[in-house]
Length: 553
Ligand SMILES: [Zn+2]
Image (cartoon, rainbow, N blue to C red; front, side):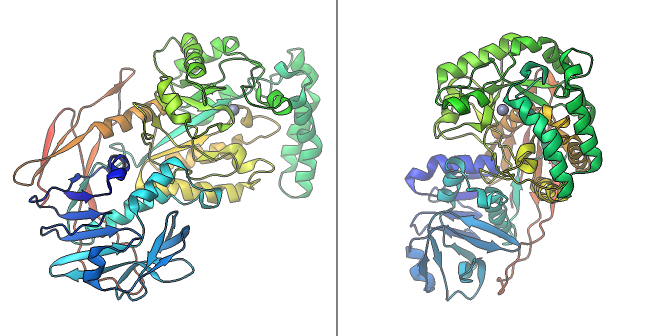
């Protein structure tokens, strides 16, 4: 059991942090015994905890006891933890005199964390405030240059590592559905349903240019194959046949999505109204943001997708800034699907600092807008769905990989092999630490002129081979709600009981929860180059509605 002493104004953050790192904890109460004390406030707690971890850039009373020399560093730098760089967004304190460092500052190479002994206790001092970092990640989000760092997940992993390597047994409900390694959400924003609707507007001229001259230039630059050029030119030439209905529409790729995904159930976000750019865009931008189709035009497609086990969500226009618009857009989609709940992703990923609270009030079950348009990675520093502050029920399922960010001109503009390296870094992370990998592949992207279906097929195969549970966004949200609802209760003997209830989603059972017991490791004081330990654990599946008695000691 971890006892926590935080600053008063950090309580919301502490509680969300321990929903993500689902391990037994409580606020410190004098007279109770703890394996670990985690402090971000100046306090000298009593007790015989085996491990005391103190986070913060200020000087504390405990610093006088260790007598270690220290100095403030400028805010906004990274620390090196083993092979991983962890960006720190608040102030940092370095400890140049530390004998046993556990973390180093990047560039300065000074220890930003160290450990020492206090009788039988292990004391770890870290020169940044954990909960201020978590708050920053879940509100402001990471700048693009740190996109590839799963910073929040590293904060959890490093804390876990220090606990287990102190010889303390740890239990956790990992963010991993029983029988799998992680969850994968394949999603599609439906901005276009066919080129026919566009006749000769700017989208079609753009298509004709990119399919012909654009692809030819790419062939000269060795960024596209001759085969792709042939296919695109053929598509451009057959446009008149498409318009008279004699040829298949190249931007209708719903069947191709399902073919690539096989039995993985994906989520399609549809725009509720046609010809609506949304409020607050200037005229030029507005014509590009408004879409040509109305959701009422695609009832048959929606029924076909629902029948194949896919989910339909809202691709929002104005919901990001208005509860009233949010409710109407939600109702418009629910009227077509005849369902009673749904989630959302905003068109163009529009958001402001209140968007998640607005979507919560508008009644959405989840949002999946939080990601980058320009790059791939972790905007909130995590692959874990979380409950944004000051919301009642909404879960945020962060977006990680977007096709147009990977391959778009003016974005990363990657070759297939560079895209593959980036995606592999992300899939390897969720394979190791769990969570939800969220992929956005626009349905139109499978067809000419983009022809990104080949790489999508490869990505989906990689995810298949890494033992993912393919879930719709709604199923993933329900699974993480089930994990959040599980409760630890400590009995008088120190044994911990876990209470959990199985939840169901549209009548289908979800995979179960696991309990993970980490095997405590022998500890020796850290040497000059600290590296994370290889943790060993055993998983047990929790059964529905039962209580588990697990002795912590
Ligand atoms: Zn969109």
